[in-house]
Image (tube, rainbow, N blue to C red):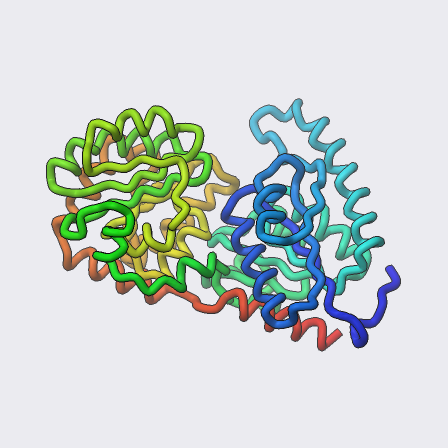
Length: 373
């Protein structure tokens, strides 16, 4: 594919991926860091039709094109004929995007659209960079790694999956507003309407919600509140009504489908109960929060469990398996709230794992690759 030289125009960067906030937030962080480096940088996102990036990316001020790509059904293989047809259409659309946009580089952050978009970019000779958020690499990124110029990771030991000479451990980019808040814990509790003198349990189940986490929290509310704890419970939109009805019986429990001020929520929390998505873990590390991680079993390659184990084996978090959460979560959180020394140790160990300025490091690598080429 014939391209213009970059000496007389701003860079054109294509960013592909999405599907969950864990992919979208890093993608937007990288785009924002590119714009900080050069406000004239042209950035085009490519996502999957009908996924959340099609709303979140335009809301952040960027243009996005949606591909009709969908994930493979690993349990009902007969359903994948339609998936293959969508993949073929997506590859054709990806080639057209490349012809029309002429990117200097394509960045993949994971998600359905990342595979066909970066594969076509590599075929056309466009330099590619992969940002792998998890401690266990996904199939798509492993397939793309051979022709990628660089693979930015957040965990050690990723040479198990990728060529060692292409790996750069940058950490995962996170939402800037979470790191910029300077409110202390007591003030953050007051700002959210909680008693600053009571321990606060923050429950984060994801934007859609997590059935096991919500059921386990519901079962634990009697215990936690009787011990003097308050609870800020992010239920996800699918479970909001039933969880809010349950929370209404407790004056110190607030249930909400979405928390708009996650900066305050994190600062206020004494203990965080969460799934083990890569983005959330990076936020916990950068803020040095004590967390009980309940990894989702419904993800590719069981990567959330591996993410959680990466912290739990370093005493940087406590892991409760999804199958055990209904009977164990309430007791585990209560025990931690009564052991301040243990909480303090976990906070220190979690903070020690943090990698700061990931978005800037990734942009530095992008410029290094383009300067070389």
